[in-house]
Amino acid sequence: MGAPETTRGSYRTAIRWGLLLAGLITAGMRAPELLRFWGQWHALLGADASAADAYRTYFLVELGILAFVLATAVVLFWALGPRNKSE
Image 1 (cartoon, rainbow, N blue to C red):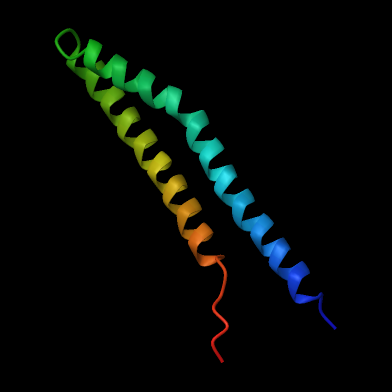
Image 2 (image 1 turned 180 degrees about the vertical axis):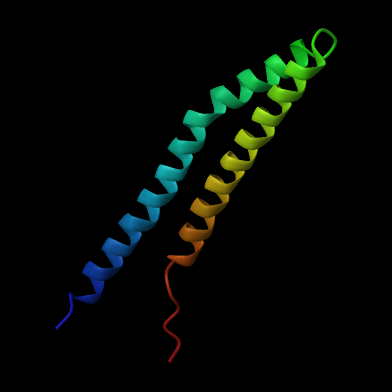
């Protein structure tokens, strides 16, 4: 036999919120690097085109990773949400 319904629901809720929190923490830890790359990119725009292009690439990659992590966390949070019992 499985666990009672309330126990399974509380585990599911804990996992759901834990994944969302992990995604937010991961995104928050990547945000300073993202801002640093953006600042370096704009600081070098007029001086060194090659370095500015490199920092633009770093910025876009970090932005993509951050967006992917947040989107994955939100989708998992939604997918693990409470189920309707309309039988």
